[in-house]
Length: 239
Image (tube, rainbow, N blue to C red):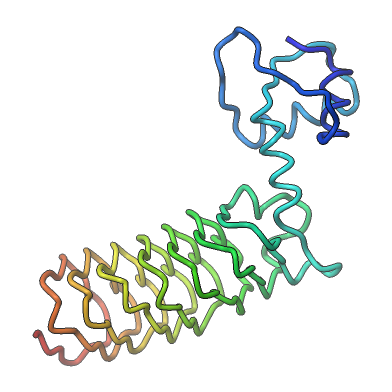
């Protein structure tokens, strides 16, 4: 239990020698909405005491410093040195995410986390730097991306990664061994080349897409149920 004044001081001067330490009570993990509401009360000193732990404040600090927008709110910059991003880091409420048209990622980025850009409905441009390792589930769902160049460093593409997006053309990494469930479902993707080394296509991977042509590698061993359901494929050659 700490006084609001102490917590407020630490929040405003996080690099000072004053540190908020965890008390003897059990560690609780509060969601982003709760964190924000509590910190707002602390800053206006509406509460006298509170159970607030260092990890909550550190997370807020991380959210505030890892991402920033241009003055129009149409370009989102992720800070150099950032290795992993997620929806909490990006969606700070500073700007309307539906207005973002371009995202600039640093060379340091390794992981694009779950739902990172989900709902960025006007996002049409993003750079994927060499060294990127993972694109997790739902990362680009409901975006306006039409063309994506994936570096060969990417080892994992999560389920629903591009589902319900405007994707029309994509170059996959040579290290992608599995097209995960619904990865390209309900998209405008017309053609795709699966690189040699890809061994499986999961359920619903291309369901309800505009897929007309797909090149399957000799390494392919498994195609899941309804993987090509309701597509524009007229023929497919199974290796």
